[in-house]
Image 1: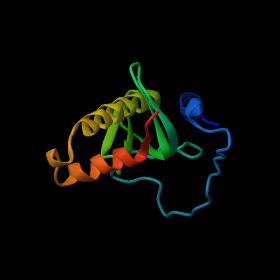
Image 2: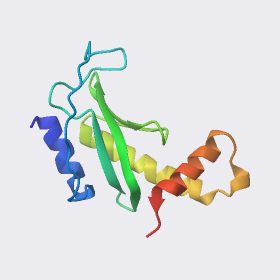
Image 3: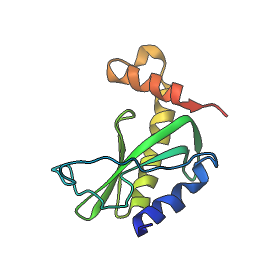
Image 4: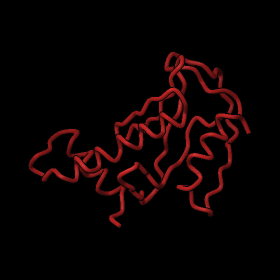
Length: 137
């Protein structure tokens, strides 16, 4: 396992259920690079699942796995999820995931505090998505 994969595994292992098994699919592609940033390399995770979102102040448990897409562009790592419209950044994959988690907790709290008549457009979708995704403990 590469150093990046080990970092991601160590950071996320407390939030992954014991029953989860990662199996890398075999897919042939024409090119592993593109304009959206550098692919992390063979054997490295480009996407990881997470069930528990933690910060120093809060913890959220997802009803289903949140796929975090991780990529490197220059010196920076990015951790993103398009459904939640959130992207975290950092100088390491771990920093990017930590930043991502902080944003998820902030926006979950923000949308939870709004009444339905205070949101419109994309805000309605995000409020409903956050409410459906996270269990109340």
